[in-house]
Length: 293
Ligand code: SAM
Image (cartoon, rainbow, N blue to C red; front, side, top):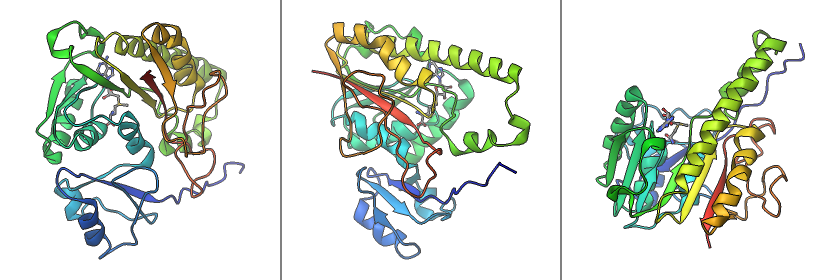
């Protein structure tokens, strides 16, 4: 009986796909049915009351708006690619952040969307099709096996790295952990530690690889994990290499008050983009921005 039901009544968010519709037109359309306001942090993001179900809404069905949470929407916005740039989305499926990048670039330049999993490639291609973006190249490959010196990557200026992670920062996962069947026994803990160690090893490799692209000047690393081993520890481990390439850590959205653990000297980077509608332990996504001087 100590498993209390948490308050999960949090606002819904939709991101306007500005490749298809402008924000004001989306507001007018959605306000016919809902109380809608612009988000105060992420451009093109709209906030709706809890429990709004927009799955079948025509604007969702035709790709004019994407149902995308605030944390997820903050990632491409933090990378802030310029129209005309070449950008690499290293772990792209199902592609929500890929199409957000394309919208931020106003369809100009190129987004290379790399994805390892064949099944998930289909979902990525569907998302791209729905968005109407013409500047996204879907690429079925292991990001780690891309040769940064190959001509197709020689002009990549920004990399979004949103690798596989434990997912421990998502509501579903957090709720799962509350179930008695998940009450952590000794062996479950050992399994979980092993899983996190493996994920962190991949995350470090991928972030190290991202640093090797010759023209890259901005990298955003994001997870939806609450574990230090997948967040601060990954970033900390690559800092000496990053510094040798001329990178420094940056603080995206300086006005955002929720930051991470104080384990990275002088840098307060991790962001918990949840708000007063969400209990403190329901955390959604964190990221670090690594940015060249
Ligand atoms: N950025 C996506 C979005 O916002 O829609 C979510 C990405 S999901 C957290 C991580 C993805 O990375 C998964 O689809 C997984 O299959 C893919 N992945 C895992 N290892 C990879 C690798 N070595 N190279 C490329 N993609 C990989």
